[in-house]
Image (spheres, rainbow, N blue to C red):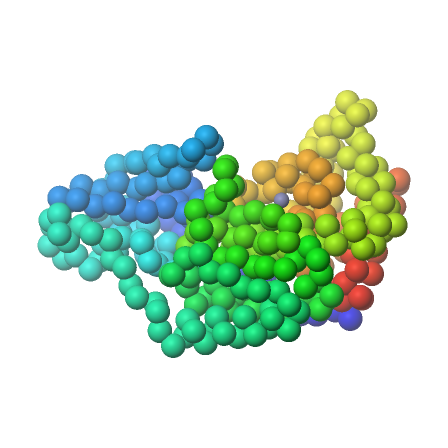
Length: 331
Ligand SMILES: [Zn+2]
């Protein structure tokens, strides 16, 4: 059974192009790309503007880049199209006059309306059928975040919810340690503020990735023979590491031959997702869970076109997913 994805999820099949305004990107050192990838804020005071971008590592910090008003307006306009909500993004267009200290405060749009509660209630009702609770750590979770979570979760098999390793979905919060976007802490899937207020693509990608971690734990405990086989296949797929050739090099060569592995472009980009996927068995299963759902067609093509021992390992891995999804496949 092949399921058609709703348009909201299909964005994960497309490359993330930052060509809204080539000139803007080139001039501003790809500031906009970074703004969209990792989220940011614009701070304006007395007619001076700074784009604040999160710098991870250690306790984390914000890095400010001075911009002119025009650039600031352009970034705001483009960001609004991709962000889940515009709360906290400075809306320069509202300020016709030069900014004073008073005018410079962030425009907080109240999205607390009937729509919020409607989507939240629906998501809560959906999850509660499977004994998964919904916890909210931020008052201003946008309605879109609830709606997208429901649209995504409705696609998954029922038995992926409510097992002992997925008991709670927690939306909002500052994050734990270095993790500022999302985390999986058995049995809780966390999506933190940075992802909830950021772009749709990151939110959807991380939601499926972290849910994929809960699926990995489910396999490990409840379907151990399948988990052991997944481990063997993962080792075959990544064994080039030991033979001296980097996996990345092998993948690049293959890409040149037109058989690209369908990594989803989100957060810090394809290379970082690929590195993450190959870093451990649990990351492999979690990221592949996202790819299986969001990029099924390309994954099937890749699996079919990959030959030899590795091709066989991919075929077995794909079959493991298909079996665990009770035959559900996606396009
Ligand atoms: Zn992970």
